Length: 428
Image (cartoon, rainbow, N blue to C red; front, side, top):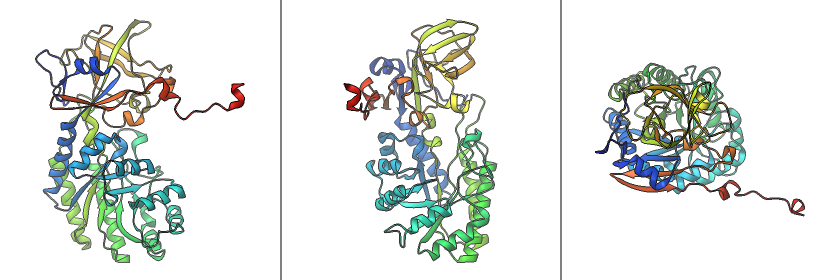
């Protein structure tokens, strides 16, 4: 098992040096608990492995994974840049202290208003269609704008079909075949294309698809350089590095992964004589995925046609199991290393049949009132949460060396109605 569970002298789950049961008692449940040191360790591991092999290397954190301002500040302190996919993420990143030149905006199907916001913010803009290029060229202040393009290589990978963002079925990016034409058009419209980008998917634990995407993008970049003489300032291979969610999955060997990617990158630079552009990656899940736990309390043990353990969280709190069929390991916070003694369905409190965190999950005996910890809940968890069934979203707590701080207040019923208005005619 690759989950590195830690316990304290009581045998309870310890998160960042804090007892999970004490956290639940103090802050209530459901509760997201983030381990600051784990976030920093993950960032440093990735950065050190790549920068030691190629000194001009940058990480652009894919903040869609988790946009909590505290998380963003931690990564700003570590020196990260930001991969933003919406104006809201640009706004959040600027508020968290990232300077505009450290933010790369890669939207898709963007409106003119979104492009105007990106221009006024001074961030770098990464385009993924000819339509967006042409509309951007007509906006005031776009003359001489530094841009890049997202290329869609015919390579895709990911833990679920919805997470594959490259290949023939993907909505993202320009086609390989039109790359030279698009870059030439950008130059003719007065832009300064300085970079090239791709992203093939998310949750990748096998390096081979990623290597194929690197090889493909480098060939596209080399072709553009030979045809148009564009000296790329940066080449961005996107993100997608996964984490093990299931016990039998292995950690990505970052030393081996970085070595193979950098060697391939250097070989292609030499082949096309492209100089020494910045090598960029856009990890999200890899940095924050295993740094957070969702604490939820069992409130109902029910023997129906099946045996259910009902908890006080639902897919409004953690959507991934329902949306992707994703596995999240679940342990008892009072005895996380206990052996399984039964198979049971762990169900949420949302009025939907698909609201299940686990089906036939081997787990120790459970009692009503018991605290469960759902692991690897740092990426695409709170960021995909909702107020469905009119349930307020949970609180988030940051733990560091045994010290805990609230970093997002638990929503109230009043928050459910924020910004709503009843027309006066309906109040008569």
